Every structure is written in structure tokens, then in C-alpha cells.
Image (cartoon, rainbow, N blue to C red; front, side, top):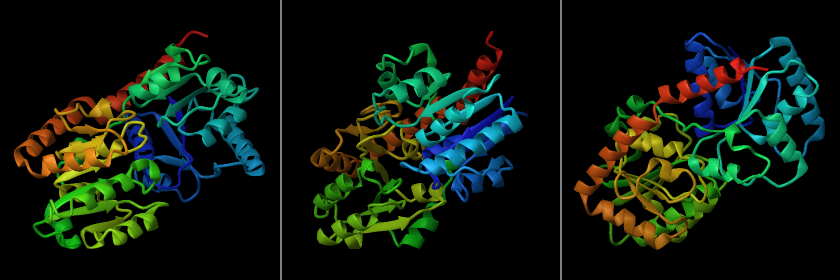
Length: 370
């Protein structure tokens, strides 16, 4: 098969990671795979390092940029006519619109797929009904919550919705260098809570810092590691200073050594306000960490409350603080939760399962009778 994946993000996150896993493994299975992403994107850089073919002509700018969109559509159409892909697999609104317009009037045309990575609303207007209901052959949903949201749309047929969870390399995250990071960050023998993810409002960093501030006297040896970068860094830094916890909160910025970062933690926390699935939770689970996260979106697909982690209502600072204390004060409970999370990730969220399901879906579309 000849497959093109498109993505508009320039940075790195769960979405980009999923695309790279699928493309890298499909290429190793003998398929012709390529990725189209903005120039200089982290996905392009990593894909090239793995020998995956890339294109960087399209910018996929967010917002209203009609001239740029027109250039992207023309470039995409030239690419599709030249390369004759069997599958075009999009991952966001910008690249999905570009691909759909580029395919207009093309016959025969490649099958158009879209993975919906989040539960952000799909606006109700005729253009979206056309894009999702008519032009897109299949919509892959990365969690049950996203699938049920899409299934409620009257113009989306349930048979065109496919559930395929994201995945991680469990072995990679199980062998981080704990002492290296603890020494680098000056963590010593402290108890360390941590979060990994883009510094954006929907990840719930404000809730976490407020809960941590409430615990500064109850857990005087606890440190907080905030790994990632993004638009709310200054807000978080200012909050930490205003609440006299800046000496116990470490902002690492963007890191590529996530297995090592996770190995340095004693508990992983992700109090998201919105989450399609939660790749960071999969990584923490693979690392064997006890996990505390919001009972929202796709997170319950991964975490069974009380069995493989603890779920709390989003934005509930008190509930989050008590959940952190319950793990902090009970090492045996924390150990059992971490072991259960690791087993669950290994059994249900493997890279092989992700790639197998994508490959099978592509084959079914290509082999379907006209």
C-alpha cells in the first residue's frame, strides 16, 4: 500500500508520536509511507531520523489564511496526482480541509481518513457535514468518549467510525535512568510528583499547582516536576512564586528524555480538563508509576479507578490534593497501582496492536468492492 499521513503541528505531543509509530512500523512492513507536515516540524525531524519519507511544502496554518490555504491545496493536489497514494490519513482540521479540497474532482481518488485525537466540538454547519459526512471515508477515534461524541452527530454513520486506541513502546518507558535525572534536577531523596505535557490550559496545570500549594505543609518533602513548554509557562511560574512553592516546583521545559524523567517520579498526575485519550498516561503507566488523573474524555479507557490508578473530577482541587496524599502516605498502595497500570498498558495499548489495526483498516478500504 502507498499511504500519506498529514499533520499540522510543528511541536511534539501524543498526536505526532502516534503518527510516527504507525508510519515507522508500516514502512518496516514493506508499505510505501510518507508524512506531510509543516517545514521544520518535530515530526518531520524524527520521521527523517527513522528513514520515513517526508514532504514539507504545506504549512497548514491555523486560523483564516485563505491565500496560504489555497497554496497548500494546490501543493497537495500536485503531490496526490504525482504520487498516487492509496490512502490519505489526516490528523487535524487544517490538513483535513486541505486534503478534502485537493481531492475534489479527482477520479479515481485515494481513500480519505481522519483520526480525531480530541473531544473538541465539531461545529454544526454545512461545511463540516460535507467534510466529515461525505468526503471522509472513515473517522478513527482514539477513545470511546470520542467515538460516542461523533456517533451522536446525525450526519456521521456509526459504521464509518472506528475505535483505535493510541499506544506506547512499553519496554522503552520501563528502563529510564532514575538517578541521572534526580541528580540533574537536584531532587535528592525527596518524594517527587510530576506531570508531562504541553503547558496549555486544558492540561490542568493550574489545578495541580493549587493542589500542590495546599499540601506544602502536609507533605514537606514533596517536590513537583513540571515537564513541557507552552503558552501558560509564565502564569504557572507566577502562581508558584505567589504561593511560596517556587522552591519546590521545577519547570524542566521541553525534554526528549521522557523515560528518564518518568523514572525520577514517585507519582504521575494529569488533571486534564479535556483529553482525547492521554498518551502521557500511557507512558507513565508503562513506566510503572501510580497515576492520578481526571475522570474525563478517554482517560477512563486507560485507568480503572481504584485498580490501575485514581480518577478525580476535573478542576476539583480538594479531590486532587486528597488523592495525592493517599498515594504519598501509602507506599504499598502506590506500588500496587503502578504495577496494575503497567500490566494494563502492556496488555491493551501496545504499538503492535495500533499498527495492526491501522493496517487492517487500510486494507479493508482498498479491497472493498467499488
